[in-house]
Image (cartoon, rainbow, N blue to C red):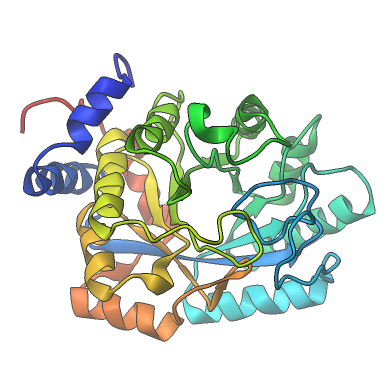
Amino acid sequence: MPSLNLEKVREIHDLPFTTLIYRALETHHKHQDPAGVQACSLKSIKTGSCPEDCKYCPQSARYNTFVEPEKLMDKETVLNDATDAKTAGASRFCMGAAWKQVKDGPEFDQVLDIVSEVNEMGMEVCCTLGMLGGDQADRLKDAGCKVYNHNLDTSREYYSKIVSTRAYDDRLDTLKLVRDAGMEVCSGGILGMGEGKDDRLGLLLELAQMDPQPDSVPINSLVPVPGTPLEDQGKVDPIDFVRTIATARILMPKAMVRLSAGRKEMSDETQTLCFLAGANSIFLGDQLLTTPNPESSKDFALLDRLGLRKLHPDEARKAQGKEIVSPLAPA
């Protein structure tokens, strides 16, 4: 988005709350189906023993947490989970592996085989496997992977306080490989890691300045895990969280804004405000990788109360040809 800077992003974020929600609603209605919410499922197919030091993550081998290391799941187990997710109403199946970087070899070949079969089930396939190199993004795309998730986590300025084992530009390099391979980009971050407001806005600015912008933007609320360096972090203020969702919607009109980790701690009212602010995707299942998530029945009950419906991925792409309105244009 041209001529966008931190000051302009702050100007949007700091609007009176009612005005901010109005602007987010206006943007959402222009570029998205305002009654549609995409249901996704996220499965950890290789858990724990990660060599990275991300301070929020219970899967790091550097921290003593409840996570027990597990090797890469066999194909039959993953396909059964994908089938269950589809039956539960998910249209996208996301697979995560606790790797710093994908390595060519038998395990990656197994992942490619699983991707191919999940794709043949008619589900949209997303992977989050760490950094990519060489032709790995192309191979994932050819196997049927539609989307690749690689979060920036936070602003460039705050990043070194959260991760030291992977550079910020490493993440951006992987996202470029993903885009060049023809996959959709899913990238967002986590709120509540001790960052300031400008760090949250810096993250959104980094994402919004991508050309093209990410197709999906997951916004997570930190789930503090005992044993990690961030175990004592307090909860994100709900209104601050909603403000971030609304700002993301205004800055990235075509993106699916995904209400991700931390929903189990959110009230129905907070989640409703997030939908009002432009969030239009949730993750089903009782876990997001290793952190707790609301039951699917509770999710669908809330969507039903709000008159919202499950959105198929193809429906979410119908807005792709619409013109983006400047976030600072008068209402």
